[in-house]
Image 1 (cartoon, rainbow, N blue to C red):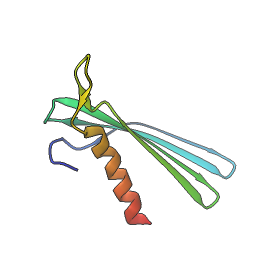
Image 2: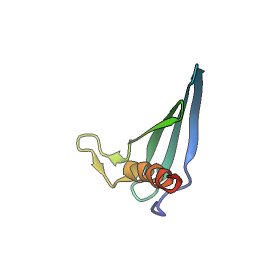
Image 3: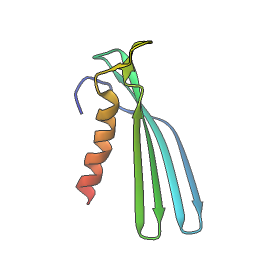
Image 4: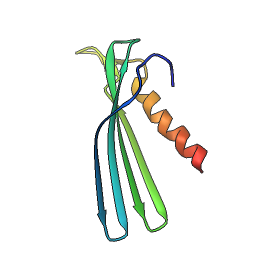
Length: 89
């Protein structure tokens, strides 16, 4: 990740299990100094039997009211998850 932000913070979390299915939801945010805004990452991990499904959604990295100009902060956050999963596999 680029060195333009302060460390990522866990905003909230939720865990749920039913039968063989386990679900974990995490929401993170990060302040980016380069454009003076915050970006968020919503991460959902679902485990079922021996399979794991991961969804990472970045949002809020843009600035402006009419035009949403983004420097890619939300994509940076999703890339962290992608690289971590690739290292595990």
